[in-house]
Structures are given as C-alpha cells and as structure tokens.
Length: 115
Image (cartoon, rainbow, N blue to C red):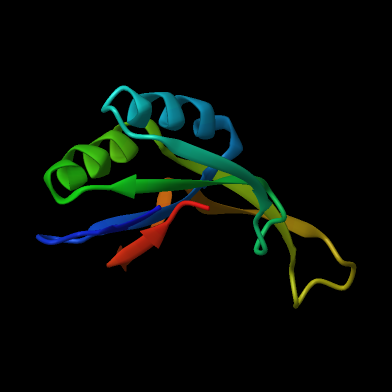
C-alpha cells in the first residue's frame, strides 16, 4: 500500500535525547496521538547513552511536538576532567559542560509505502 500526501507533506522527526529523558518524551508524544519508535544510541562527545526517537509529525501537530520535547528533555550541567596544560603533573580540573535537551532533525516525506 502506498500513500501520497496531496496537501502539506508529513515530516519525519529524528530526535536525539538523553537516555534518562527518552521514556518520558516518548510517552508525551504518544499522548498527542502520534506513534514513536525508539532506538538506542550512544553520544560521540562524552560517550553517554542516548535514545533516538523517530516520529511522523503532521503539519498541524508540529508545534505541539516541539513544545512536548522542550518540556520533557532538559539540559543538565555535568563536569568533565580536563588536565591542566601548565601543571608539572597531570592534575585534572573539573570543567562544567551543558548536555541534554533534544537535537531534532526534520525530513519532509512526500511519499511512503507499507510493505
């Protein structure tokens, strides 16, 4: 079965969120009547566990989904140890970094097929 979108195309959202926010974000989007697929993933910068949420979003629900992700995927401050360059011995100093939130990629879907 194939489907065409005669008016505005649906968008496929790929949202990368922290693992601790993934289930809450998934449930919040499902409450809007949308289906969400969750894939485990790992971040490259800190090697933290993430989740990738794949969401089909019709035009009339885009603002609601964006608001839902904003409310349920928080940013956090974490500390990483960075060695001081001028120290005679490698003494790591804690450096604050901001992690979290949601990174969202959107793709327009003009056509799809169910096989």
